[in-house]
Length: 542
Image 1 (cartoon, rainbow, N blue to C red):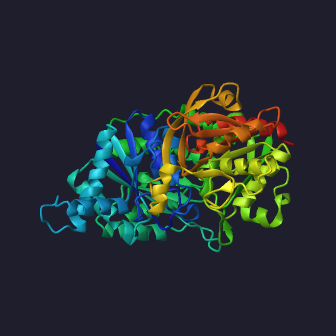
Image 2 (cartoon, helix red, strand yellow):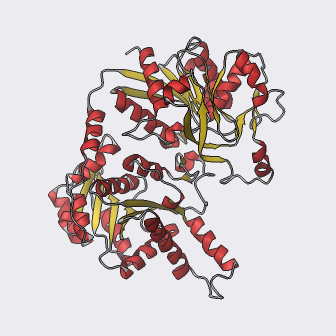
Image 3 (tube, rainbow, N blue to C red):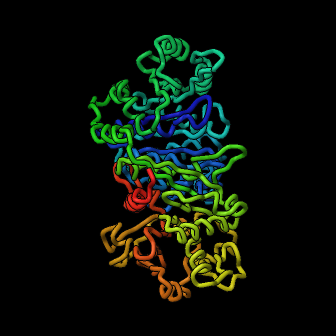
């Protein structure tokens, strides 16, 4: 088994995960079995309890693992499901070691960071490789070099390199800024970052330089001289209009060939035919444009707006747009502003999406958006919370239950059309929030003759779930009498999974309790988004 460690330098958010995914894709397409692994720095046992504004969209895996966004990137690039073995936090490592100590598994040893923490890190790497029968494990180290939180990951990297000479390489992804007042790229920040690696006993074999433009010969020579890296192993990774172009950019510099040679493996050129077709689609000029309003509650951070809070949704929309050959423009609308200023700020876009959410803040604005879409025949897609709030809007507007609500936001409502699952109450009473929801993939039975059946093309389907509250079956008869269709139910618990309005009543009014955005892939877009975008296209004014 071979190992590739990928670290970051200078700043976070420069695309280390994209680089890790791109390298994994290149090696997979060269015929090797690749297993990517992300080590995170936080003490949380998973990403499930983290505010999406704080750390971006929690990526939900098939097995219920609540992970970092990079795990979603691996899935999309490799077209493979990831899970608990592909994502590890330092909190999980500490807890494992401490639990073992409590069980006397260390036989009276004094338990220390080195070797016990580092041994557990290495054990996770090898365990993943063996389970996946991997030729190469690609390990992305969270954060940047020099942070105290991730030092044991780097120490594990050093130890593994020492014990497996010739089988381990280190790729350092670092930022090369071009200050406006100077007009030239500066290599000094990366030189200092590499020096930090050297101080930990690590010499990078490759530097992937993130910059505005391709590096020139002068910058490559500086890197080679001061960072002790061969000039041909300085890989330029300039800004791209779309991250799916990155594997193509890296392969133009023969990165796969260089890595395979460095690891002593047979050199095979990666087959990027399908990926190149995808990139060509992305950059083909689009003649048709649709405008979508995303009414959510996690856009704002100070004076700035974040895409990452709904990263999986935006990716899924892009996948559908690439497939249909159209351009999708998304307009981010803060649900709290809808509450204060009214639905007029939404206008009449080609479609409205209300995505994932939690709690009372902004919920009334999202309910208003659902009503606005239904009343004005604007195509509507509700995802998880967006489905629940659309049901509340229907109950208030059509059934006349003005106090209808979810127990999550109003425990005293007389019409709790969305309520807490009985199995979840015990967790809530104990304030056990982490990893206790209905998580991961759940099978559902789709009703024939519905839009859902038309979309899936089958009675049996499954989606990933991440929620506690459900549509209350006590009110189903009232809903169905008034035209709301429950078009799919879970196989095991018979819970409502999908609601919709018939085509005769609305061009597209559809909500799913699951999260199709997490299953969408660039080479295999999710059919729900394809169907939604097609209807929005008919509604488009462009």
